[in-house]
Length: 517
Image (cartoon, rainbow, N blue to C red):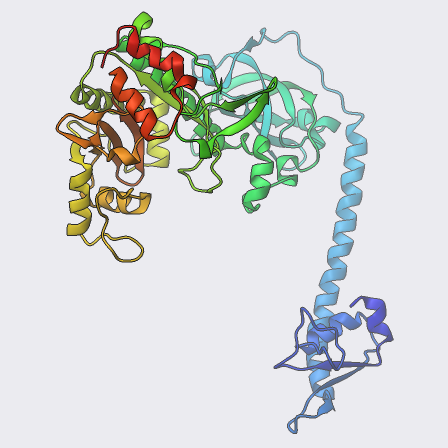
């Protein structure tokens, strides 16, 4: 209810039990809860007549003594509000005057100073006590009085505190500087004084700066903040990536990809770039992204492994790091419509060789990450309890997993036990892994649960030479298998899965022109 309506009301009703200061309007049907709120709604004297519920549950006029008591509180509040409005007005007037005065303040570069060396934030330690220049984004801006200003500069390689003093922080650009604006700063790098903390242990004592690109008032905080709902965060992902946490994650992601490359290259693998627009399914048609390719039906790739196999005869062991796509509508961390897929293929190996290579991959990549300063720092920041995996991993067959689930009372939702042929979902799989508390290579899944390219086990044709690597706290992180390398077995698998091998002629040819396990 606005003030005009409040003034026009002759009576206002208050009910301490059923009234509401939020949704009530002071009428008899929608009373307020407190007398103080009724006075606030009235805005000024003379007040309307205030009614409250008496002992006989009838409306009675509020006593004069009660009105006097609450009126004192109302007067204090009103004076504070008026004082605040006055102060805000004076502050705004002063701010506008300062801004107007700042337009007359001009700073110039001092050519008598040593030539500034252009560096990145990551290079600061080796240039301490030198005059340097840097360009970047204003991550934070803090003003302290008229003659002191702190800017946290971000350039993609790190963060640097820049100190501006005197006229440098009295220009129009300085007074209106917003976060995410781009600037170039000049000055001398100094170690942080004792008792003060700054990123890197140093700060830039600025002697000149220039505004390159402005940002809107409030910067990114005007669009979103830490309390924004997830849909807002996702819509503004391009801006969120500027934050410290996500930028640290992106840097770590780059390092992870680098270490995977280093591992494979050090083991003699060749990196290749298979197609991502394809005409064949690999992991089932229900998760294919379909599109029209000049009149023909095509898909976004689910996996590059079939294409990798075609390169084995010419390149030996190969790997790729590319995007894969699954049309999965389930919103979980295990169901992504697009993700970076690391895949590798190698020839003339056994199933045990495959398991050994998976162990080597995971252990070596973790060791490389922990040996890198950025990798170690990031892992310690996000997961200080992390323990790198060590060989040998526990190897457990699918049938042994069923026995473990039964022995430990881990059941389906209907309280029945998992039987041979059941697909073990994520939750029981994770319960088992967390309880065992070490990496597990879960092997030899039933043929009916696996893809057409997986071969049967020699000692049990109901099972395949397949494997998932499970780790505590996460679950499955790697999936792998041998390939059905004999032509007849592959064709039989196509038939059992109801797939037409004609569409895969280029793949089945690998079994005709010198096949290998």
